Length: 399
Image (cartoon, rainbow, N blue to C red):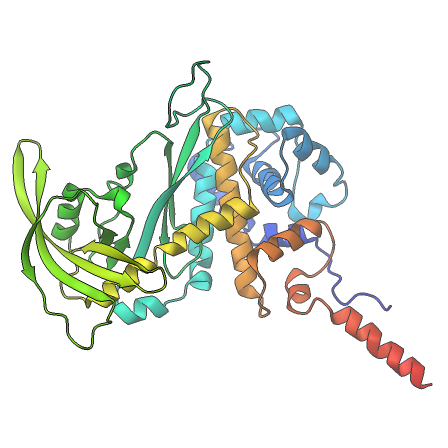
């Protein structure tokens, strides 16, 4: 076979790191003072080492350090200055504030946001739809307080809860917060930016009438499900027109009681009862979108499933079962690096014209992490060299 047409002077890992760029890392390091008093193992070296851990799916400090020691002569392509020892990486995970990795992630999201966005949903309703939820990651040690009963032995695992907000026209988290697993989800409602051009979608675990009142005062829309034990008074039943989807069974205006300390007030909301033929079950939605068609409100709530797909994608392709540190900061660093790796792979997936399943793409990059092939060119036509060889064999057989 002739020389491969996919050969490239930079490894696949180097090409992935080049998507970040030196400027983003330098700006984040400067803003977070993460390289202050650091002589050798800089923020950039730390980030590259932890991204290697995410892409190669390493499960221990020994694996990361040992595998990277074999990269002699290959590190110049992704500008790694110092390969870390186990103790060096362990100390960095403990001492370097995880906020610098969060800053890198946010800057990458701003850089590639237009590349990842699909504005078709926003064009239909003229408002941005954002979904938020949380997922809990179990820890091997009682580092952060977890939910559940205390065992007789006194031993109990910890847990960290990752609160995430995504735009429905994107496939990566827009905002991320961390709390201990025992913390109530309502903490996220206080951090949301209330904007008249935004509709928030969330499950009924976040039901908070005081928050719903703030949403109404800020003219921010929301769609959720009503709790089974909710107490309310029906004020009015809206007629359902013939043009409305037949799955809409009921459209009502209701009032709920908002308790704010000793004071009580009434809050008007809209309750829609909808029958989903695919799932063969009824849903009752709660919203403050009084002018929107009831079937469109039901369709908006269905978009909440996208965040479940995101959590599934992260846990399947960048499993967080083994952590390289027994402290909260190290755990946050590893989660941020998994998010950065997920973002980089999403950018690659969007850049390739050929349709690739995300899991297949991650597996391919893991296998060829330090092979010198042009990533995008190969992904668009992986069988190019084989087809070329077949054509040559046919030509030779003719003579």
